[in-house]
Amino acid sequence: MKPLFALLLRCYFYLMSANLFLWENPAFLTRVDEWILSRCPKQNSIDWAVNPWIAQFPEHKDYLQNLHLKHLGFLDRDIVKRTVQSQSKESKYIEGFLAVMIWGYASDYRGPFKTRQILSQDNTGSSIEKAYLALLDNDISGAYSALVTNGPKYLGPAFASKYLYFASPASITQIPLILDSQVAESLARWGNKTFNSLTASVQDYLNYLDYMKLAAEKIGISEEDLEFLVFSENAKHKGNQSWANRASGIYITVTERRAWAFLLASEILLRDPNLVAYYSQPGGGQYDCISIRELVKKSGLEADFNVLGSIHFLEPVVNHYTWEDLISRGVSGACEMLAQIYGWEYSVDLAKASPWAKSFRSMAKLAINTTSDVNTKYECLAVDNSAYGLSVDRGVFEQFPTAGNEKEDYPNLLHLPAEAWFWRVLSKDHVVGLIDTFSGLHYYTGKEAENLNWPN
Figure (cartoon, rainbow, N blue to C red):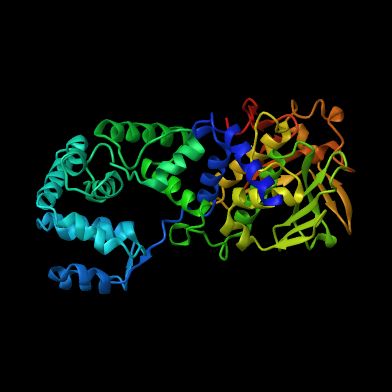
């Protein structure tokens, strides 16, 4: 019954988030933040075998061998784009198209045969040429029509849009993004938006581009990065390793690891309003932790996320994870996997989330955005050190006189004073801000306080 229960639970939360736009969905926004925190890694290269392609296209043997050897058998987006551009400038449109198809099919053994089916059509060469020339004239509609509406048999929107993306010049006003099954599934899953990658008309495709432009503006990333993220995150969700683009955590800094700890803690808090997070130094200070406990004892959840070590779940089930594994899986993915074990919700429902969870998530976002600045630090006003006891900084309130006036009425954060709800923001060791995670206010030096109500 457990697998069935888990499936029903996922269906329930999918329906609960079905009315959210892409730029409103916590699950997708967190995946964007994970990508930013991982230093915006590019999509994985594909490792392709040249012989099956030569078998289908012996007339292009030299070109295919050179393409394979030039990059030691790897192809990524940058290589394909350069290849298509250089070949097309010499009017070698078929060669550029082949590079796109090789990349698009990756390890799919059907790729060479299916590509041969397309290139065997009498109008394929002229259709590709018309599409490329239309792109030079900034005519996406004409380019799409040349390949899909009036193009060769067997070439649908998925691979046609791949060619348009790689063939588009830098001067084009709107980038023709890829619309394939991965992208379509991702937008339906996280954005409640339907685009058919099998039957999309010219107008459907233009609507898709407009939607992606709007979504990218709302989220604060480029349209190209958004398309890549919806593509790769859906592949990761489905367990497709070749497109998973799993970031490595081996070389992350302590500042980045602390941001990961903030993100993990806040994502768990968002899933259970009975949970709180605080700063602790167990082991006499040799551990530097964001700790999670329950306000009211229920399951007995206890977890310590040691920035200088590992991730420790102590109750009700003992588990230890490396930061490398967490970063590879992703915070959202890890929270979803562990939901049934530790009793929090599978997905985030912002209507049920505690105010301090949203505040902590906002602080995580701030930490993510400042990881490249080694001079910016976030420190809790209350430090619980197992060897030296409790230390509290109350002097910072003199700098922010309107902050914490009602802190004595705040809920008891376990055995800690009210200052445990507060985090100071330092730049070059000078306090420049104060975050009240309970009331959800961010106080700045000489400025009005800002509400912290993630994702707003």
